Length: 143
Image 1 (spheres, rainbow, N blue to C red):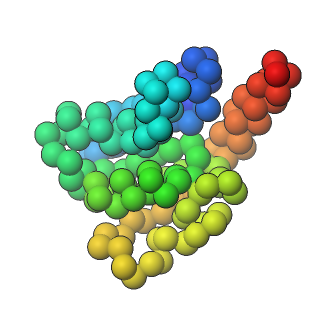
Image 2 (image 1 turned 90 degrees about the horizontal axis):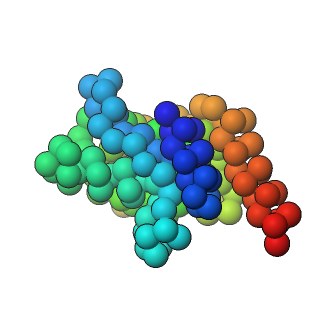
């Protein structure tokens, strides 16, 4: 479903990244990137899904929730996951440009963070990577 959200982002000209938040094996929220549409630099897929889930659950703490996302989170998004108390973060592709879990930093192992998130990476990596490659290839052709 996160891949489907990423495709929705691409259709509206946003970088194709999608996220889905699950609690008790039920989808609570799904979202995609929308910083261009919303004129909001914080409107990444992860932030959008966390905001929506917080409203639906009625709490900014999203304990016992799992977050599925198509790209390794950036510093802002990973920080939001820490503050939301996400249990498990499952992401598809590494982000060598701004990822902070394994690509540029290894924040998961930092001792100063007050919450630990279990990380799984590489789920549907090829499909996620291909969406991003196709999106940027198309943009280069248009320009």
